[in-house]
Image (cartoon, rainbow, N blue to C red; front, side):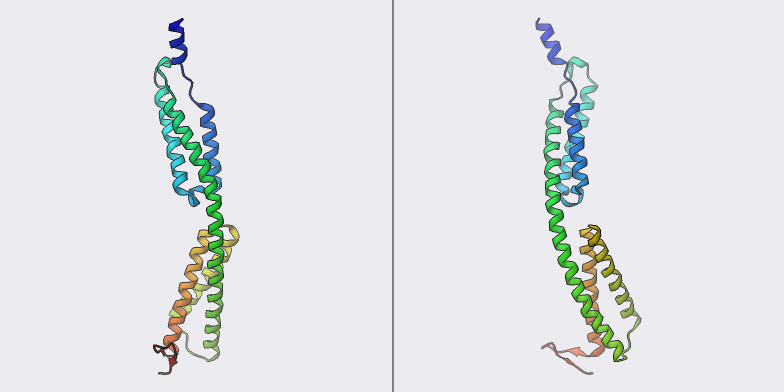
Length: 193
């Protein structure tokens, strides 16, 4: 009877159910863009999942009565917790990124409108707009379009990056326009050359 007990307890089964749960949780986290918005947690889930797979393969290679999947089960539990946490964190991170992107795009639109007025004013006054300024303005327009499109598509990081490019281009326009129209003194007033 004792030999039967040793044999029965020694023939452990691979944690297939737990492995399936972890796989589904990691896929759900990835679908929630945890790899982007909760990268550390997502990476921890993937690492624990891979460690569990390695443990399972190592145990599967042993004689059936010598298999012990405790380490794999522990890794799977860690992976499941991390994947579920990554999914939740990703959803919160995505909302925060959306708010930041909306603010960045609004700031870029305001600067873009200001710069457009400046360029239009220069054109009305028939001031020369050099090739560098034209190229900067074209890049500014392209990035403004990209910021709007990225925001609409839910690519909040892309929207922020494009909006930052617009803000930088607007600042460059202001500086070039200031150089063309006169230098500013310490009080911020321009005086003619």
